[in-house]
Length: 72
Length: 286
Image 1 (cartoon, each protein chain N blue to C red):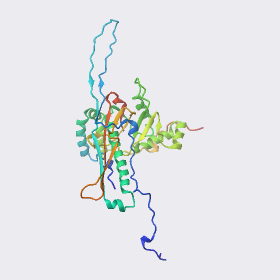
Image 2: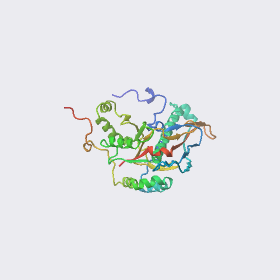
Image 3: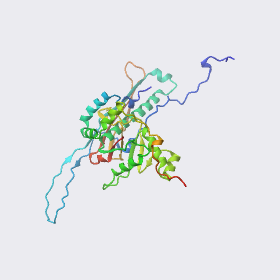
Image 4: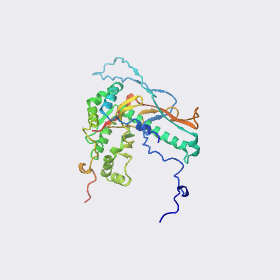
């Protein structure tokens, strides 16, 4: 099977890889780097990579009902 | 009872149509979102002047002082090269049940199209200067309309009306958005219940790109920190340039090998132009 070109470059998997990309990103886009750093975006990504937070799909019970009132 | 036939070649076989199974390609969605060009150039120049200053005098004095202005360069440069190459040997070609070359060509184009898409979406997200953080939970059912309303607020109040708006989400965001489509409104909810995902909803065109398209990684020449990000904005304000009419297909007879070397190359550069960069919004999922 051919190499799936797109998936040869997945998102970083470890904190070390993340810090490596971040160091380069700081140079290539300093404006956005400062903005994301101020917003805590990098800390969020660090926590995800470190396994401190897990991304889960919302369950129906957690979701408040919206719109469409019940018919009388 | 034992069957008389044990020899496999005595049985009939049916082959699926004359190509290998098609790869499950990820969606390539970038073209309708940008000003897509195929000019055979490396650079596109689009300079802009500085914002002028209007003075409102405290009384009518009949005089004024002359200001100065500067012009700033804004350049799209084709920086990215995408290449796909394989060798099909002569015997493989003549003895295969499938059209090997055709199958590999189709695979190459699908893979390359997605690679360009992945680069372009990450670039769009990174260089857009509009920013927005979702409420906690990202594109959940409870948040979907709030997100659309907040994003809409960032695209209005300008002299021109920017009506053609888009949001790009990943498949993992679809459940929340779809549940919101099912549950909000009357005719709209019914339309969603009958037909599924609505491509146009809350005045945005909704696009679903491939899973894990937004990455924190180095793609080609650029570093991105887009994991957990999505992008929204107004269509046609960024330019994607792919010279040579998208993709160049090459077949080469090479020394020392039978058959042919197949190669596909394409080039791309994307620019979010400075004056309207704030209308491309980098969404952070919280």
